[in-house]
Image 1 (tube, protein in one colour):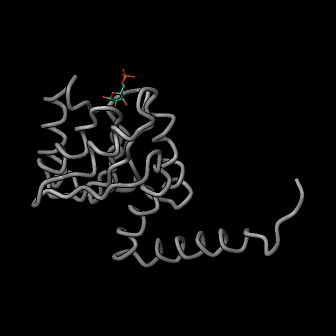
Image 2 (image 1 turned 90 degrees about the vertical axis):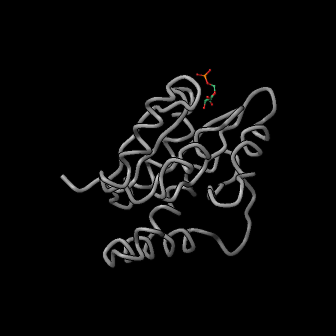
Length: 160
Ligand code: RP5
């Protein structure tokens, strides 16, 4: 079993349909990851333990998604120096702007690399890019993934 280097955490089961996009990208790129439900409000002790153990367990990036009063990414960034990529999950009431604002406005000293609302796929790619700095095989796979995406874009639009 490969060493898990990326933790994908989310505030609720209801975040999984969004956060699955990050997992899918990591799977495509052959990056070992784990998934956990960790709620800043409902399971604060779980959050504390996950952050406390992250470095020792060999995690190198944490992708954290949450919606509404989305404190999970910021609290995780406070608890561990492992880089945290935040994913604002879209909400019904405020369309995810609440999530975005909750995640992006971190105080100096505890940054969260915040993606777009619902941007879990890009979070996976960002995590892969960070790991690829130290992993030449992954770098090749990521380069190939990017080249394939570019190649798939047609030159001209067509009637659908
Ligand atoms: C947040 O509250 C979660 O991240 C989720 O996006 C939102 C709603 O959670 P549920 O009520 O669906 O469990 O903590």
